[in-house]
Image (tube, rainbow, N blue to C red; front, side, top):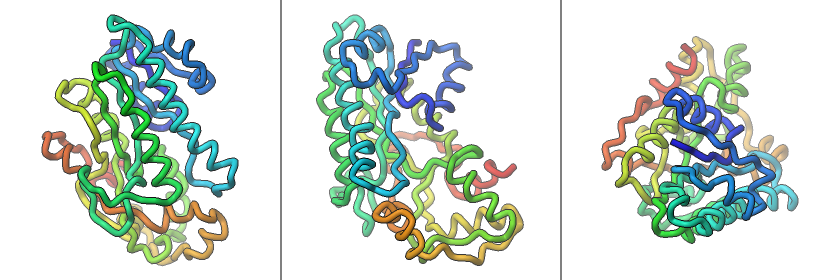
Length: 285
């Protein structure tokens, strides 16, 4: 199978490619520079069975005006261009499946959300994600469209884990702010498995919350990680410090929605790491 991937150098992209290669699939990396040339993009995508859209610059940084433009453009414009590139292809060379990343940041932070939730966020990230998803609705109806709203992706090499482990190992770990904010997470292996599942299952389409079934808060995550490492987790990263360092972007760490993967569970997707204990155990083994 021929699979085209944007954002292939990111954490999810690298793990997907490793898995696809085990099955001898042909991988086409869509370079960032090619995402803004629709004609060239059509040529790259032509003949691919699946297009996976993972493009998007880092969100966790100060949201200067320049950063906001880059965050939006790297998601919305690139998705729009991929959709246009797919739509202009003839039936015989048009991909059968389009899979796109999205984010749980689309949801308001004061509710429990399934995919049917209408309580959406209206902050900067919420608006970006809403427009990001709407852009792919222009896809030719002959192409099966799957959108995964991702929680925080955890794994041995994930940025979150690599940043946290050193401080926890020396006993300086601790919760962020109150620690009571929800912590929607997903193990990288379940992300990869969900993408493959959606390719192989022809009935899979529409929007899915890609988070683990267990709902926890930030404090529970830190304590579980510390316990597994046999270290204390008594410190706190004050909200004020985060706000001084990250400005508005600190809201990503201080306020989160509570999300459940209702559609995945109803459609019998099997999580390998359904709770934080199994997730952390795999990370530190």
